[in-house]
Structure formats: structure tokens, C-alpha cells
Image 1 (cartoon, rainbow, N blue to C red):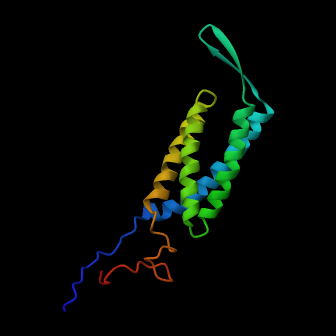
Image 2 (tube, one colour; image 1 turned 90 degrees about the vertical axis):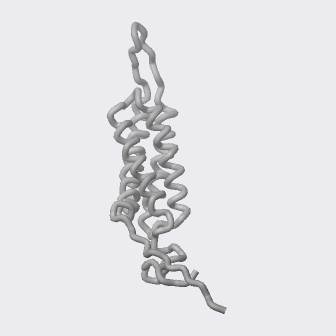
Image 3 (cartoon, rainbow, N blue to C red; image 1 turned 135 degrees about the horizontal axis):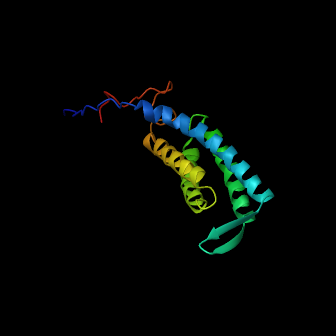
Length: 156
């Protein structure tokens, strides 16, 4: 019997995606530190006065401060884990936490619009970088012990 082989094209890594995963981990660490500082700031100075039309409202930011503080600690931990060969749980946790962070920053828009928009843009890049190279990290089963793609040229 003849054995059919199918050639597999070598998998080319995008420099943006490969470097993006490392950069995403670093951005998550920086973002986590900033969220921790935002949280501490919101807890320490928790009353904000907002003028809407002819009315003035007083908002208490204590709950937002605790949300930012806890989320910041989690994002910092996952960002640090991403730098150690990007384990799968760190990628999944990173995507979930950063998606939640986008929602938190969207709700934070009235208090700090520039910073919230900037964080949303950075968070979108982080999610792209984590999802783009999902199976391309060196610990993936299709890579050899040196992190090289081992799929090219093998019969299927």
C-alpha cells in the first residue's frame, strides 16, 4: 500500500504577534500597576462632584477604587506569568481579565476620559496579541524542544 503524504507549509510567525505577546505581558504588568494606583487614588479621595446640565451630583468612587485595585493586582500577576513562556492559563486569564478591563474603563469614561480611551486601545492590542499567537508559543506540542516549528515536512 502506498502512503499518501500531504505537504504542510511552514508556519511563519508574524514579528508583531511574536513580539506582541511579550509586549502584551509587559503592558499587562504596567497596566496592573496603573490600575492599582488608580484604585488607591479612588479609595483615598472617593468623592467626586459632577455637573450635568443645571444639576450637580456627588459620586462616591470607593467601589470603583476597590474594583480597580483587585483587577490591577490580578492583571499584574497574569502579566508576569505571560513572560514565563506564556502558559495557556495565563493567555486565557489575560484575555478574560483584559476584556473585563475594557468594560471597567468604558464605565470609567466620565471620570477620566483620556486615560480610559488610552487604556481601552491598549487593552484591544493586548487581546489581539494574546489571541494572534495562541498556539505559537514554544510550549506548544507542534514545536520541538528548542521552540522550532516541528510541523513542516512531516506526513499527515
